[in-house]
Image (tube, rainbow, N blue to C red):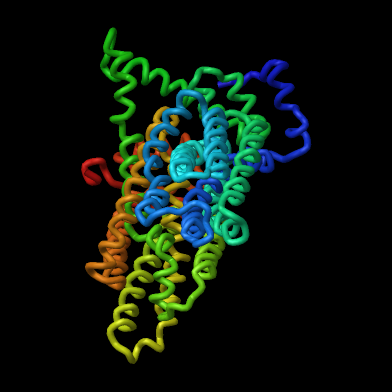
Length: 507
């Protein structure tokens, strides 16, 4: 296909000052910055209750709350996250990736402003609900927009920036709450949404979405703004156009169908194809493995776990919280570097195995530490396993499913697929956090970590069978990889054949 040069209006857009002054990589980083800053606000939402509740429970607090009200304040944000993910996926398909981000930044800012001006319990609940819903909204569009606007060489590190931003957001919320009143902290959080809005305002719409909408001229202008005019980018854009035309033909006319059946069956058939079902099954397994390995249990109960592993009740709760936050942020930064240089499969396997060993080792040493007085002097070993767990889960199991959400779904079903898997993640998140205290009470802390270790092991084995390699591959190549997976073996970056699996095997 011959791509014609865009008309003068689009050429003016391409030859803007931003394009003249900055390299394609710098422009891709600029485009990714908006979703990354929005993701930091999602981290702030997750970490805000940890600084809000202690301040509300102080004797000198102007607003008095009960224990039941404090539990509602903590759970009000996670409550709408799953619904927000579905809405985010549908919104970005209907209105576009950029428009979805602009809207969610506004709702996020409204939620933080409501919190900053709250003077009653219902107002706090309203602010927490809005920020929680916005946290769900940002999940699918952030990963999809970055995946669709970045070069395959840089896609991994830019996508990992989302999970790094979530970890940094938790740390920032805790820092704001350590040094400021909770209303001032909420106002500071709202300022990030203004920055994210401005960053998205100067960024282009996703070329893939514009192609699907049937606007190749604007799609090419957006693609050239992001990627420049080199031969590799031209070839990738031609493949995108061909893929969009092929999807359009398949959507209008299904195999062996004519007449009135064409339009009614084409839309539904795309959700029954291998290239949608296999990524869906893969990410459901990945998110379940990540959540049921206890990643959020450690975040929610870090103070209690520190007291158990160290064996002291005198630990400063803010210091313990910040130590865990710093380790999480540092690990997320390492994950960004690893995703740039290491494939998805090796990183997932290393993370899964390391997480399993750390959890089982932590369980064993906690058992000896709490049951045999002689081993209480070796509590530092339990702390080592706890820190190693945070490190191993943070370099792979935590960031990878979010990265791959924007990579492995076909363009035609990317909105719904990312929305469904992100929503499933938050459902698992709720189940794990809700059942955590029950597990602690019934089988003990060591038994709970043993359960999580076994789940991590089983999930890692299943991922070894079904997880594809997507590093340095274009989105069109990944889609074709899933389509042909049942016929040919998938070859990874090292040249070795990666295992494949059929839909029947997954089921």
